[in-house]
Image (cartoon, rainbow, N blue to C red; front, side, top):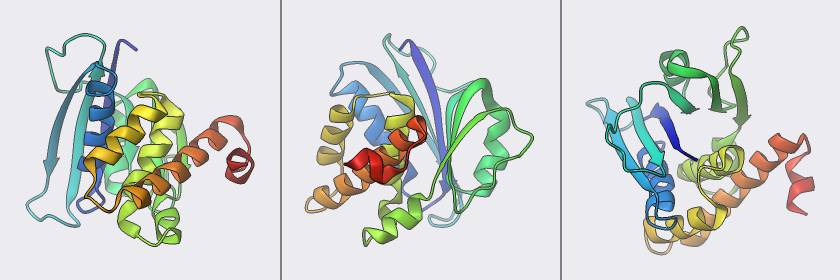
Amino acid sequence: MARVEMRLSGFGGQGLILAAYVLGKAAAVFEERHATLNQSFGPEARGSACSAQLVLSDEPVSYPYIQKSDVLVAMSQPAYTLFAKDTRADGIVLIEDDLVTPDPMSKLRTFGIPATKIAEELGRRIMANMVMVGFVTAITGVASVESVRESIRSSVPSGTQDRNLAAFERGLENGQAALSGRAPEEIAT
């Protein structure tokens, strides 16, 4: 991996900044690579637009802002609409299936996951971000699975590690299934 530019976007309150932090920490702390994180969000905390720019690199990052995303995570329709056009032609778009309808004319490689629904099945809607982190990890390989697990363990509030790791594992299974064309249940066994 030379340099990967990622944008994680959606609504405030979906945990996208933490998701970007977890991925960046996995690369920088547990794999001794380089990472930068920039974030922006609307004046209201929950429900407004939210975006995180994450640059991961084997070399020091001299410019921490992304030009065109290699990977776009869109967890809301407005985020998809705003940022899909700023994704490289050979980039990957990962969407929240229940909240985003991709442009049928788009030639971007798009993968979807019902992250919020999966998180609700696990008992905590707020963990949709960790479901998406698992999905991102499986589809993109931007950091190793074990590095991301370690990053989650050391980044989420004490006492929530097991639940967040369970959410991550479900996202990981769905990502592996999406790449292989099999159902997530077949991957988990």
